[in-house]
Amino acid sequence: MRQYAMCNEYTSPRGGLGPLRPQSVRLEHEVARGDIKYEFRLASTAEEREGVWRLNHETFSRELGQHELAPDGLLVDRYAATTRYLCAFAAGRVVGMIAVNAEPPFSIEKRLPLGVASLADWPARRLEVRLLAIEPAHRNSMVLAGLLGSMIELAAAEGFEAILISGVVNRLAMYRRLGFRELGPPVPDGAAAFVPMAMRIGELPEHVRTGIRRWRARGGSLLP
Image (cartoon, rainbow, N blue to C red; front, side):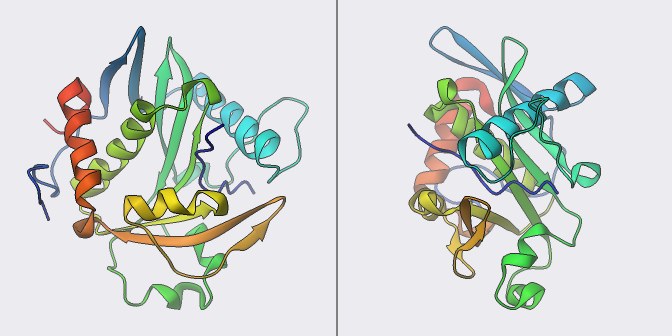
């Protein structure tokens, strides 16, 4: 089973991709894969946020063992007040999500060898990305590309220059292919371990740009 996850905290245009620069962004679009139509947009209602908490519980408590199981099946993000949740919906239900937060202090700081000083050589405009989670039945390239492509385009459209993540240790190869590099060693967290990582948006690998172009061609572009 594929495992797509980033740490849960509860408690220059090249290759024809198109401009990655600050501009307005429309956070709602649909992409079809076979008979399934996926809608990618920000969670905006209490019911949708509950869907986020439920998916997080299944991923980070039941699957990864990072947190204890909760009787109500929900795991509420301790950073919810400053975080936006970009979700993949199928038949109106949250089946995938990724969280973005632009307000420090970032959760990654506690995993860095020198704390925030480890980021001294990175651009000041940073976006922390957390909680990449997808239901097992929907772990396919379209949902992953939709979430990551949406996140990267959003980050570029809002003028961010670097993306920070805490990547689950057994998916390091995937994060490296996306262009992230380690900022320190793995840090245990419950039954899981996470690696602090970062990527400069201007250094996005060509194969990732190609994947975003293909995703756009299927109707997934966030940019007008």
